[in-house]
Length: 452
Image (cartoon, rainbow, N blue to C red; front, side, top):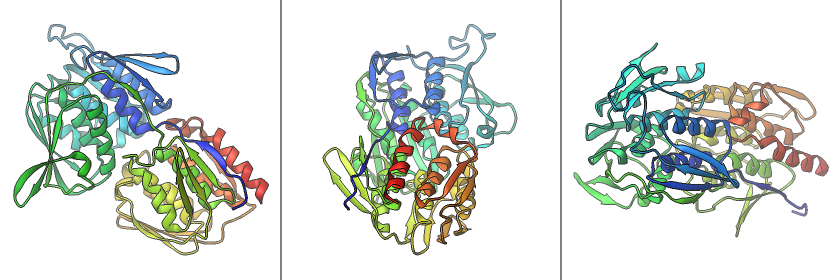
């Protein structure tokens, strides 16, 4: 490839920014966090943490976090001020904030009112609220049971055992894990259900807990007995055969730098695969625990060239072909891969993604509908999405609906590299996770125009 690559700096990881700020806010002391993402979702988590008693200050491109004294505190935390209003935890449309912070606040004391935007009130929370109820937390639902808005009253995790499934989301488990070190006893969290999705996100949670000195053990069942195993050795979860024993250690402060985000880098890596211009990504850890690092393997399987060197990853275009792939471990990549599949020569089947219906929008349906606008044929079968490529409408205007979903907006932008005049109904929704997306994206699009 003779063209010089376009260089893109990956934004900070949204998943790690959430978890790092939560751990720092729960620590006994002051932490300094550098490289945390500035986005709408992270703002929601920051606001919830300050509502619970943490202090977060911006200082010299760093966030200085002073931890809560004795854990999250809501209204009437001391039991002496019954007329004190609940602490307000407003989630807007951040599902990560909602699931993590609900479980974390439940590990504190007092009353908390948990609410959000209308779409957030539609997304199920019964799995988590039921689990927290078994730990002694009380809920008063204002509308539909198992959904926001609700008022949560807690004295911490007063019971020591709980079960949770990972069928809808791994974030329920991550929230319980983050809250459990604040208990005054060991807490045993067992994974049940029929299947488990998004395990790599749980691994990110365990990494942050370890880095902030929160104690835990991971047990897996073999031959009818439980065995303690190193958590990094766990690559997949088998329901009924794994549990976590979290110690009442609390958290210790740390100086921490957040690594680059593989989810948001995926659009630029895909650009290198489908466009005419190679793309070089900087700021990513090639050995990251982030599940969306799988985008390298996926694009490689589809025919792109991936070259990893010290400090950067180069993606060069190739003759793309369709693949069949299970994406239960990396659901946030589905819109990216769905768009790339439209550039391939043969069909692509994306499997194990039924839980995408519970995202910011019904993301499974959204991918099928929006990719089909480019002339592809798409089909949803059970928990799979099938994409049969067509002739992309080069030189024509295509209006895409984003559904207010940041990942739909960024992935549909890829069609500009086929010469399509891409029009998004709500490009500003990228502020949820990547406010600077279009600044970098326009550089990639312009470089491809020059090579056409």
